Amino acid sequence: MTATALLEGRNLRKTYRLGRRTTVEALRGVDVRIDRGEMVAIMGPSGSGKSTLMHILGLLHSPDANHGPRPELSFGGQDMVNLGEGERTKIRAREMGFVFQDFNLVPTLTAIENVMLACDYAGIRGAPARALAAEALALVDLADRADHRPAELSGGEQQRVAIARALVNKPSLILADEPTGNLDSERSAEVLGLLRRFNQEHGQTFILVTHDPDVAAACDRVIRVRDGRIRDQSLSAVPQPLDLEAREAVA
Amino acid sequence: MQQLRNLGRRKLRTSLTILGITIGIWALVVFGSMANKINALVAGGSQFYEGKVTVSAKGAGMGFGSPVDISAGDRVASMGGVDVVVPGVSMLLADEASSMSMSMPQMIRGQVADADRGRETFPMSYASGRALTPADEGSNVAVLGSDIARQHDTKVGDTITLHGEPFQVVGILEPTLTAPDTTVVVPLEAAQRLYVKTLPPLVAAELDPATLATGFTVYPKPGTDPETIATEIRATAPDLEPVTAKDFNSQIGSATSILNSILVGIALISLAVGGLSVINTMAMSVAERTREIGIKRAIGGGRLRIVRELVTESALIGFLGGATGLVLGAVLVTVVNEAGRSSGTVLFQLTTGTALTAVGFSTVLGALAGLIPAMHAARLDPVAALRYE
Image (cartoon, rainbow over the protein chains, first blue to last red):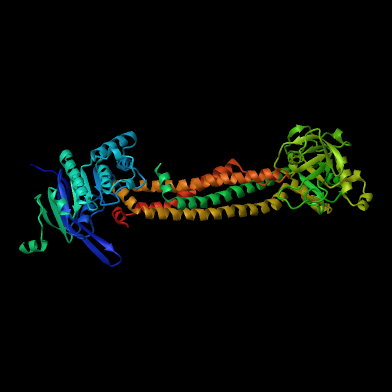
């Protein structure tokens, strides 16, 4: 099996400035490769840099270029480091889907309008957008809730609308930041099963940021991040209850 | 439309902001209409004085007051550059000057018809009836200005009482928005007789009505500047006071331009306050929607798109406020004008230009006020915005 890389990053580092003197080194030089069709979990304790890594892979932030080895980031074989904000926004709109932990939806828009917003940003409007959005809502089993506002939907339903919005443009990459973070275990399993289904049926690539071992267990691979570095890129789908210190000590 | 729904999110706050703009535009419409009316009066007056020298007896002001001998006109006629001199008698229509009024005082003016030999350029058209003719001298006939005809509810053929004498109405003028609207024109001989009646009996006994004038209209020969004649009258006839269009503009024009500035200034100040409240409202909206803006940016909403949505929303606030202000202003202007019409006091003139300017201005003001918060929103880091509590 010859897997092709969808995302490839080298020397990814990011330092945030908090106030005048304090800086936080969120990522301290990371090399990462995500293959097409993979479902990858990024795990780590809070403050480890896992969200920062996702933001860079999702083109929401750029890696630092002004110190250390030159960063490289390619998406679908195209260089991303030197793109402007407008170009990156366009790629996010057309080729990526995003699911966030909470407050995912625009409260004044109905479920279907929220999904259509993603079509709109990708340049599809009017009747075709409505048809695509209806189709995406049907996929997440929410066809009958299309005209409900977010406030009229349960947390699990809201998250499914967000997933429909992430999928509607049939992007090659879907990034999810704690997609089950605010859901009980039953809804959580439901959402996770949905993501897995799209990954398997449509071959879409998923990157899930999580600290839930059950979520990680459902993925093909787990990237463990700690202190701004990748500690482990297990290819095993079996979750390993890890003691990172112990492992380091062995190494 | 999404922006309308956004306005509905904070109904009280949005309504108060719209109300702020409404008050500003209301003031702009009302004061603007008042300024329009004043400007129309002044422009009409300016046109009325154009191309001639209006001469009155010294100390009498603009064309009415104390009498001079009609022979003074001959002195003026002998000056260089003078073509025609028309003697006239002007007096207040009312027996006593009524209370202070914004509008022109109502006047009776008498002069021999066609004595200007076609030199008068101020356009007069008749709504009904006819103009006076030289043959009317000696009879009690009158042509009414439009305001006077309306106020007295008089038609051609009716009789109107002037200083105790009945006059038959033979013509009614179209509105001119200036002096002729509030003027009754009668033959010179009748005006001279009425004028003497207004004087104290002892003074009146000394005067021969037939030699009496309160002023002259002097038409220069073609190519002669009325200013030249006015200068000569000032130098050689101390009992006469010439007024040219230039004098009128400098006296009345400067006073009205100050008044205009004050009126428009008041309106602009209230609009500045309204504009600031739009900025405030939009800044609060942006702060409240920070996470929503973060989501939109993250899933591929461009910066320009975010700016456009917010600016449209604030322009909508401006437009709604402006439209409401225009409607309320138009209602007030119409009601006050209708109420004042019977007494001849039409205070306002709301033009299409003023209406369009008011609404256009408020819409642009709203858009500009929204621009600052919108740019701020577009520059937000999507990730930071998503985490915003």
